[in-house]
Image (cartoon, rainbow, N blue to C red; front, side):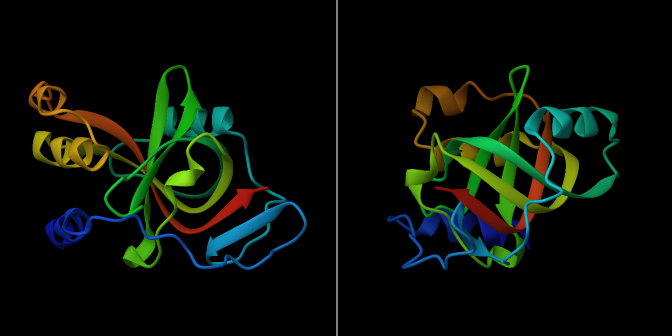
Length: 159
């Protein structure tokens, strides 16, 4: 299943941009499931949660963060800054929606499931290619790495 998602992401050449995200209120647009940000935690608090999690743990979460990177192939994932040089790789539930490249540098709130994973060298290289990294940068990836991951069912985009 994971392979199918990755190959589907690579197969596209253009980012998929939502045609017109619906207005959730005056502060946000949304993509995916609509939700309220009232109990969203900060990215720093989310980092603290991730640091307490084991590889088999999952945590229903809602947090805000700065988008640092978006898949250039299709918008099928994004990375959010957590602090202390850490970030969360956000993928979208059931491959149900994509985000525009224009989110880089913007603040968003994500709703979904946080988990910790050990990402294989192959998967890391795949995501590096999706991010537009050079072949030299891709080849430099040689070790399995612990990653903070998130499966979002919705994203609020701060205006």
